[in-house]
Image 1 (cartoon, rainbow, N blue to C red):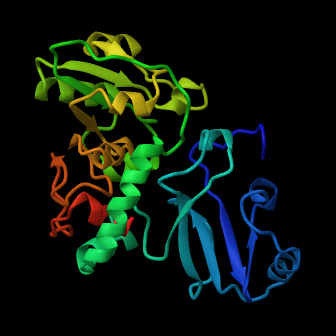
Image 2 (image 1 turned 45 degrees about the horizontal axis):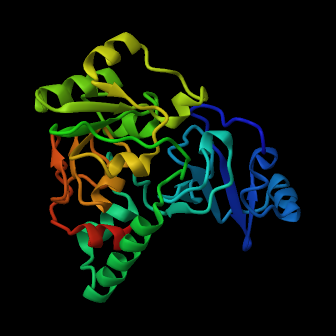
Image 3 (image 1 turned 180 degrees about the horizontal axis):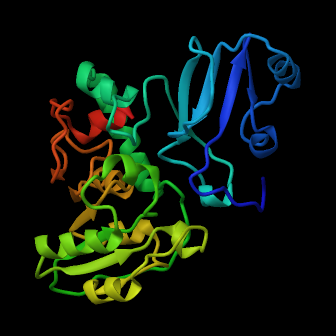
Length: 294
């Protein structure tokens, strides 16, 4: 898949049969998962499928009723490069219940946070991991970028742009779904702040559709910083506004104030300022408990 682009909104599926894993779209996913051609052959000849793995929120695949479904999505520390460029991931999230970016149904992460008491020793391990992540300057995509220095004497607020047709927005941000509307909401909340807008790297690279109103965004933001590294930017801001972006989680790792206008997996646990309620999420957690669960 080197050098090819991922299809926007596309889904992938794989199957486990008698202990092996194969891809239903082997030509697209061969570098990412072990391919066992004998299992693929037997499945096509009608062998029993024990399990089907679907990518993200993929739907529309006809399956037998007794097939167990698990869902796979990029991990929180994904790669050194963009998933849309099909850079091989270092980690995956695998969920047998739902998927973490879809708040319309429980995910395994949500169930852990709601139903399981995180042991103190595990939270301590998570705290050490969080410190190591920060010391190494790690993020989801670990992209290089320019440095930037905040303007003196101003409160600086980052507004995290997203790909507007991303599944996490379609599932988890029912009120605000456009980057320009997120900027408008952030400006209402922070009328005197220096608003910094960072467009999503998939948009900056031309792999996804650009914002439909760039002039409007430029009028609302005090600065637009497409090329500044995320690690640098998170070290210079006071607060962060998101719809569902994972940048909010990365801000929480650094104990930055995060305002959520949607329902990302890290909202609703007492760590963020939330505009939307999530009735299933009733517990309060520390950031290290969230790291331990994730």
